[in-house]
Image 1 (tube, rainbow, N blue to C red):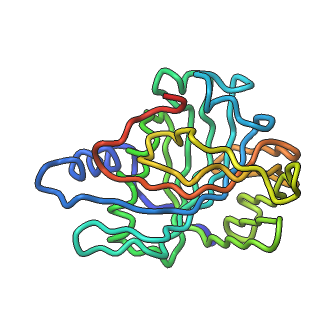
Image 2: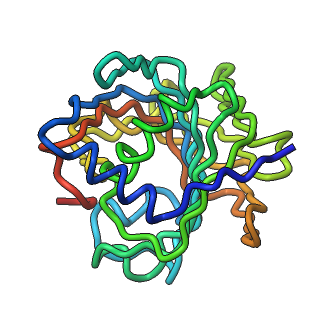
Length: 227
């Protein structure tokens, strides 16, 4: 059962300001993303200030590989972003987003991750909700799969694009939002990609998807895509 966590935009914004203050310990993480959106491959947002449509509906399933802030170890923490970048993300304003934390992610980890997530994407969200739900992420061969809850809240089943040599397509030397660095976009397409979260419902099979590992930190990272 999903439990809505009473953390609003005001609290997350306050956490962001606190984490950015000189007295707060530096926070950093290396995280593995499974991501899909409503654009066709490859998402034009990474080269332009507008999505393919007047919306960009997305799921991002994330597991932190390593990271810390002070004595808080972030390794193993999992979170999931579902939302819509909307038509004005290039001006710094998204449309809506729900941040889901896996129940095993501790309060201390969440307190670090919340502002770190906001900092990485550098957008204002008129509608921002936070909740708790189990997250599972698996990969077998060329198939990556991720479930939020039992898969009814959000689900991704992605297949890697084979490329000319059959070993997959990698896109490198492209920024990922405000992350400090990334190891390249492994290009996938969605076999199934859907969500039904907090009054928002979408489904986008056969569209853009990728796997990527990013390095992100509080401070010093550029914001925006395609900079």
